[in-house]
Structures are given as structure tokens and as C-alpha cells.
Image (cartoon, rainbow, N blue to C red):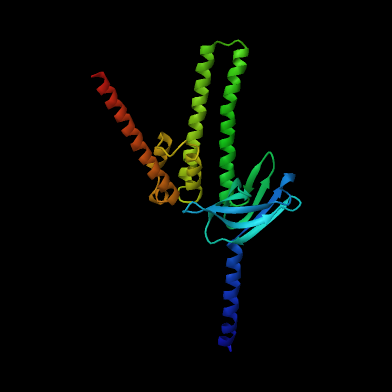
Length: 251
């Protein structure tokens, strides 16, 4: 009799566990928008593939300032929220409820660990960039106040250098803290996208110096590093050719 009861209970428990597992491994995007022009528009979550194509993961219509998406999470991914062909903001697609806010003043995804970390990073970096912009305004004010130009340049150059170092150290530290998850490679590629072309800068070399193999083997990181090294070799060859031509002309 006990065996019969166990045989009935076991399938029920397994089913319960399966449903619990499915519930845990789902993302729910709860979005709000105060941008009236978005009402009636379709928003898409897209992921960038290794072949260079953007693939749609999910979509939703904005209705009266609200939109909702949900689905299973097989693995944590960095996706981009799109409207038509325009990328709006990055979102980490991970298990849990992700609250997305769209307004003219703010774009934010919160509610899950990696999204919280990403947007805390973005806020801090934006704050440092604003402080750098303020240095330029400060120069204009100091000139109008009649301060000595040499003193102005000395003071403001020091402020700019300190802020740049703080920002570079912050970005490097954030990437290092997230080498082993999706944020590290994603923020690294955001940093690289600000360059005119793939190249090895002192900051990038510094980041790679302590990076684990798993980070270096990320498809996009590896591809960037390969192209950057090729470009640096070409630049060095061009320098040598110019030097040789200059020496030859002097003869």
C-alpha cells in the first residue's frame, strides 16, 4: 500500500519540480513609457549573433504607455531593445522581473541583479562624463572672470586628467569584476565601439593583462583583438615605410 502511495506521489512531485523550475527560469519585462510617440509602436528585443545578424528574441506593442514580454531563459544574454531599426537601450535577459522605464529623461532596466549592476555602471559613467563636460564650461567662466590663462589651463588640465583616470579606472574595474559573466564582454565591446577603428589602446591592453581565458575567448572580444592587432601591425609597417622613405630622400 505504501509503495502504491509513493508511486502516485513521485510523478506529482516531479511535475511540481518541473513547474517550479520553469517558473524560476523565465524573464518578465514590465515596461512603462512616458514618450507618447511610442504608443501603438512595436518594440523588439534583439540579440547580435556571431554571424553579424540581429535576431529578434521577443516583441510587444506599447499600449497606453505599457508593454510586456516574457519567455523562458535558457542562458543569460545581452540584448538590445529596438523600435523598428533603431536600438534604444541594452537589457540583460535573465531570470526574473525586469522593469524597463522609457522617458525623455531616462532609459533604465532594473529589478534583476545584472540589469541593476549595468545601469548603476551607466549612471556612474554618465556622471563622470558630465563632470568632464563641466570642465570646459568652467574654463569659459574663469576666462570671463579675468583669471590668468596659464593658471586656468594648469588647473583644468589637472582636473580633466584626474576625471579621465577615475573614469578609465572605473570602467576597467567594472569589466574586471564581470569578466566571467555577460556584462564584462558587453561593456568591453561598448568601450571598443567608441574607437574610430579596432586598435590596442593602453586601457585595452591593461584590461587584457588580467583577463581570464574565458573572457579572451568570447567571440566578439576575440574578433576585436584579432582586428586590432592586424591594424596595429599595418600602422607599424606604414611608419617604417615612411621612415625608410625619409632616410632615402635625405641621401
